[in-house]
Image (tube, rainbow, N blue to C red; front, side):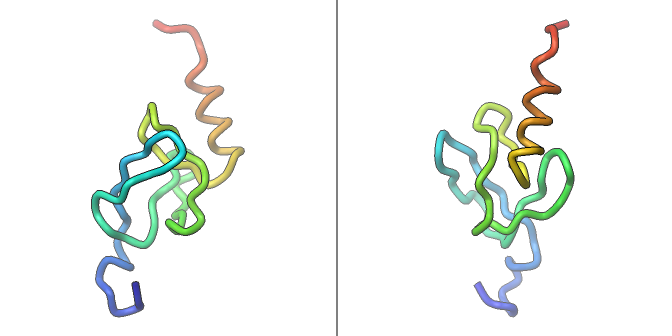
Length: 73
């Protein structure tokens, strides 16, 4: 992608799998589900395949996992 590519200004749509993700709609970044920070695709390392959401860092991933581990109700 280059600076003149319209997809570089838009978020990507991904399918998160176990250990890999597939690009469904091209873009330069995704938005962290916890912090709302943009994450460049080349820097994306943390996500939940179950929840289908990306995280900017291990701290955000842990925050989401702890928040989701409460009693079912």
